[in-house]
Amino acid sequence: MRDQLAFSQVRFSYSHTPILEDFDLRVKKGEFVSMIGPSGIGKSTLFQLIAGLLQPDQGEIRLGEARMDERLGQVGYMPQRDLLMPWRTIVENAALPLEIKGMSKKEAQQRVRQELPRYGLQDWADAYPAQLSGGMRQRVSFLRALLSGTDLMLLDEPFSALDGITRLDMQEWLMDKWQETGSTMLMITHDIDEAILLADRVIVLLGKPIRTPVELNVTIPRPRSVTSRNQPAFLALREEIWGLLRAEQTKLQLLGREAR
Amino acid sequence: MSRGIWFGISIAIFFAAWEAVCRIFAVPPFILPPPSTVVVALWDLRESLLGVHLWATLKEVLLGLSVSIVFGVLLAFAMSMSKLIERLVYPYIVISQTIPIIALSPVFILWFGYDLSGKIAVTILFTFFPIVVNTYDGLRSTDQEMLQLIKTMGANRWQIFTKLQLPSCLPHFFSGLKVAATYSVAGATIGEWLGASEGLGYFGRRASGNFQAPALFASVLLLSVLGMLLFWLVGRIERQLSPHTKNKHQSSK
Image 1: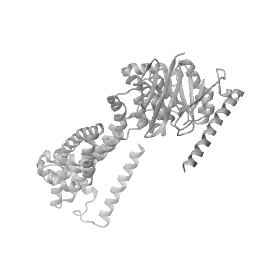
Image 2: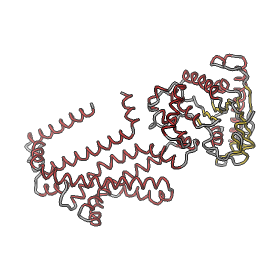
Image 3: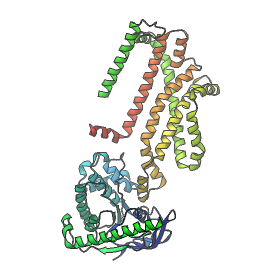
Image 4: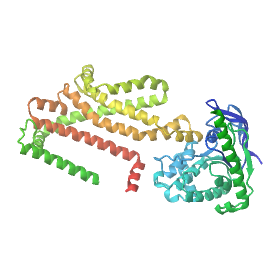
């Protein structure tokens, strides 16, 4: 299958601190990939590289067919905070990427209104973000990212600000949406269960700088639900990831002690 | 609405206490006239106060404020778009805040003349800076994450400006404008004090020179009503332009 996103030998430093070194990453079209790693490892930097807000120092990033230096406007980005504009209604917020692509306001909003029922938001079309719950706001944010009109979605800890129950709901909801839209998704999360449950593949980011990501295939059959978390395969995978992260944590602590 | 009622009650108590103090202690009217006398003076002088002087002051206030808005906003835009302009101009804006504007006003009258343009110049002196500073701060305080997000959508500079910076700066602009609206009345009044042939400031100064305290207070009353009306009007326009704040209040009730 074709790669939707490919990093080859990417090197990137952020103010003299190396973040990525000879980093390779492949995401196939239609795949759901989770990325997990200790906090502060530079996951946000990785996302900014993919979205085109940053350029690699060395190596290349391919998006779809071709090498792309101008990736801005090509990737749908769903941030951790929903970042809905408080002065825009729900329709206006979701229509923003279409407007930016040059569609007329009227046409863009019409397009959004057609989509809203599938997100359970038709009654909130003309409400302002402050009137919506956190889960609803994240659904708007998802729709907005999707309407950026791209085949690659970046989800940056999308549910970390939500309460536990809403979070489980949203995870199942996201699985549905992924299947429905067929788009390629790359999600960063701190939550091991979330990483496994949603993904075809979990990438564990290790090292400082990140050099050799560990890739684990998730073989749990679809459709999955929150109860899939009790399957032996799931538990084994959780143990494995937890082990990797814990070993990394210890290593970093030791390194820190040596440095002192 | 209930806020309006409370404001009415508070004002009523204030005037009642004022009236009582004047009567109980028999304060001479040329020192402090009771509100009833002020109202009588206002009624007696209504033709010249409302017909000539209020109108003259209103003209200065509105013209001065308009010029400040146009040039203040333009300067704030220029500073937010060009680092060079910001570096060159911003220090003066901060320094200018430390200068007592009243002390500069006579010079402004000298430069711009004793007619309308002089008063407008003083009004601008009073109102320009709150507008520039607040608008610029508003433009600068754009949410950095939102900025990144809109960039990932491929927005160009103009789109970033119109769809993100401008709307997120609006509340700051309006808080500056509210300050400026009240200052504008003070500015016009001082301009008139320094030399004029009409306007509420001129009228008040003449009245105080003649020990006509009731007439002076009548003009002061009109000036403060004018200031309050302008403040209220700015608030109205703000709510009109940012309906999401109105809804938030409704849902929180």
